[in-house]
Length: 306
Image (cartoon, one colour):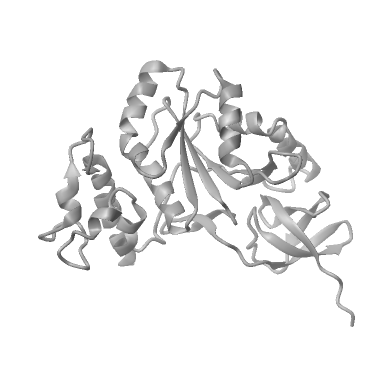
């Protein structure tokens, strides 16, 4: 029996067990995964086989990375083969420092470059408060990009395109931060496309897409991936002993600890605890960031018991 030829493709949207796959020529078709398990992710390079007017994914090629979160109940994978993660927050509504830190830690663990962007710089007082609060993050290697997507869209678009050029970037952000505005600014008409795809898939039959890939340029070198679900961000896959290594403001001080297996919570001669300073101090580890570390360490240690 002669085996059918397999074609290459890229998963650009995920609808449960159904995927939208783009061929190298730019054609898009619905594919389903072989067997009962649905393991494909947006960003996956796949080998697929035609079957009638649809296709079957036969193989997922090796991934460079996967960005995911994990709690005690389930693992939620966002996307694969990423260069960057852009975390968009806004001066209003107020954002969660814990959620921001968790997303940054998950990115560090997968060696994916994170970018933090703070939107709504036109709201002068709330923006000034948020900017000051983000000082520890601005002092890390992330930096923080100030934006006003509605008030100065053209300027922001040019700045963002420089950062995103030639890369695949996952965009994360809480509701109200301006994610839809950003995606429409960078890839005009992108969100309208999603509605058309849902209709083509017979919206009653398929669940709404959770993650979608958008090309920013006609040459198809720059891509944005939009993914909802920033409310809860479990990190049960992170070893508490590795946590400090994924927090760039804490990591340098670990070398000053007296004990090699220091938890940085109670040991004598701890270099991390010695570096904790009140919030607003120009150097050291901010008290707020140290609290995030200690709370997370306790949470992850507890999760390992079960």
